[in-house]
Amino acid sequence: MSKDWLKSVVLITSNDPATRDFGIGFVIHREGQITYILTCANVVEAIGGSATVKVNDIECSALTSPIRLKRALSDYPAILSLWSEAEQLAQQYEYNDYFTSLYLTQGHLIWDGLLPEWESGFDLALPYYQLALIHALRFNRFLLDEAL
Image (cartoon, rainbow, N blue to C red):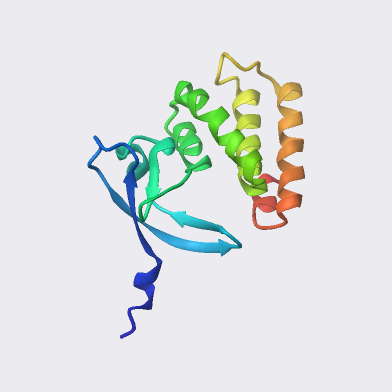
């Protein structure tokens, strides 16, 4: 049996030398110099969060998954601390798929009034849904279905 699949398994560690936790991830897609890796959210949490991710000893960024996880766990205050970093990285590298996910999540949070720091209501959420659709169209992939 071929073991070619082992080439897609990566070691995930922290750039903080005091953190000894680690985990694994799997390469799921490559696009130019961008590599998408799938891992469990608890791995990112165990190594100290999205700002400390190293993959095979290369510093990386984990963007939207921690925000979506915090929303699913109703840990809304934690979203604010992750938000600006995720948005900045998405902008820096023009990750339209991440923008779609971020703005879709932001629209839901504003519409439902789940973060007191952000105002609430449909009229205030609508521009974020529009941004999600724009970025989904730019990315032109599977997230368009999710955004609709």
